[in-house]
Amino acid sequence: MNKQTKTAQALSNAFKSAVAKYTEGTQANINSTQVCADAIVAMRKTKVKFGASRATCAFLQYTYDKLATLKTAQGKPLKDTTLSNHLRVIKQCVNDNKPYIGLNPDRKPKPAGQSRIPAKKDASKLIDATETDIMASTDEKPAMPKAGAYKSNDDAIAALIASIKTVKTQCTLAQWKAIATLHPSISKMID
Image (cartoon, rainbow, N blue to C red; front, side, top):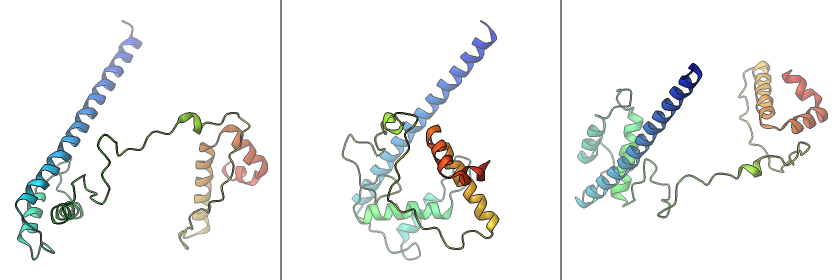
């Protein structure tokens, strides 16, 4: 076996190992969501109703204290905002009889068999048929920027240049040539 083949095989093995690890993590995440949903159902069966706040409800305080024992993947304690978010979700699910679908109980659950992830876009529809095609402009108005967002003219110009570079990377060669022809000052800004 030559060196290039050994390197390619090592990269292939590393990739396969990483995919396996990702798959295991995803399965653990799916399983943990179900475990949490089952725990919410068990809490409801106890007929406990949470009070307004941890200061006035011993059940909320107990739940918060138990959640405070959790650690991040790096071994650090969870932030107070994260703990409060978990507590809010648990309280809503138990008190309002909402199904547990993660940390966003306001999201409507999908019917059985449907993914929360939208279907992939058809790649052929995203590519111009010919190089001379130019995207049609839309009548949609861009979002209004926050007044005074840039502290100096240099900051505003730097933001413009960055935006133009971003647009250029998302245009076809034919599109960018047409834009540069119609508006030569735009292409001069990033040269």
